[in-house]
Amino acid sequence: MHMKNITCCFTGHRNIPANEYAAIQKRLEWVLNHLVHQGVRFFCAGGALGFDTMAAFAVLKLKQVFPHIQLILLLPCKEQTRGWALKDIENYSKILSQASEVIYVSIGYHRGCMQKRNRQLVDYSQFCVCYLADSKSGTAYTVGYAKQKGLHIINFMNS
Image (cartoon, rainbow, N blue to C red; front, side):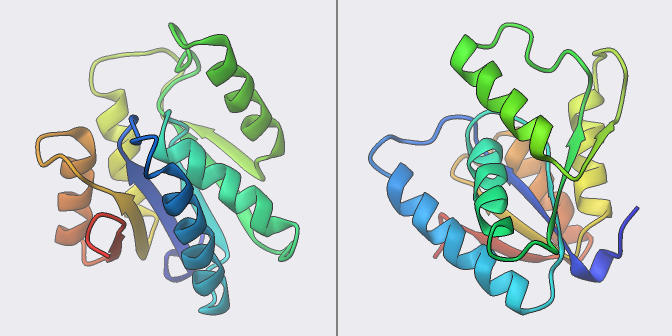
């Protein structure tokens, strides 16, 4: 895929508390700006609701200032948005249309495709920006895997 040492992935919960949203968004923009100045060029998002969507939009906004950076969507399957609200599907479509690259882990949904996507996000990256508040979640599994693989982790809940 891309050069691991200049790649950052995102993982986080789908539900972001409304009272924290603006602060997280502002901090996300600051952290991404800092990473770009450290040489990070590729940003990989999994296309999920919540933190993934926030992160993808933050990368697209930053791309206006730094056109060399790329948003890579590493998606679990083509029907990821099944059952989503119309507004969420519209946001997803907007992100999809502006991504530099879109990679599907699986064509169709199957048990384990989300976990496979999460592992690939980590395997391709040197940095992991996360929003981890719940220790019993897919995000916790992904961050644990990132720690095991030696990624530099920036958790918005700890900073």
